[in-house]
Length: 104
Image 1 (cartoon, rainbow, N blue to C red):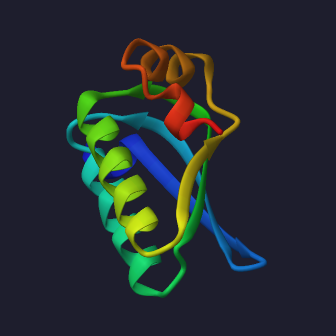
Image 2: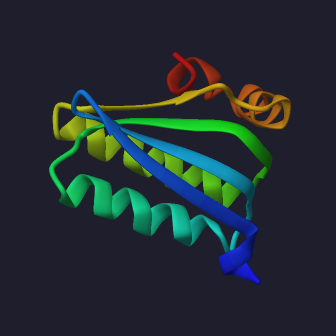
């Protein structure tokens, strides 16, 4: 079930790794995002953009992963931000006061 909840496509443009997420980020599928972000940072790409237009649900586990890798990218002189968030993602990040940090 976890492997089909979330899909991630990746493209790299001008030194920026762009991840396109589709599906639901639950406590189970957050690990898929974590492994992908590990791979991106291990490859030396520290500037990450996450497109969340097609994300219908963002759990607290997903928020934890986003925050953890926001901090890791920053520590590596890079950046991580979300583009084109779905309405659900905007609402969740707004309720947790993380919208200003992650949606720049």
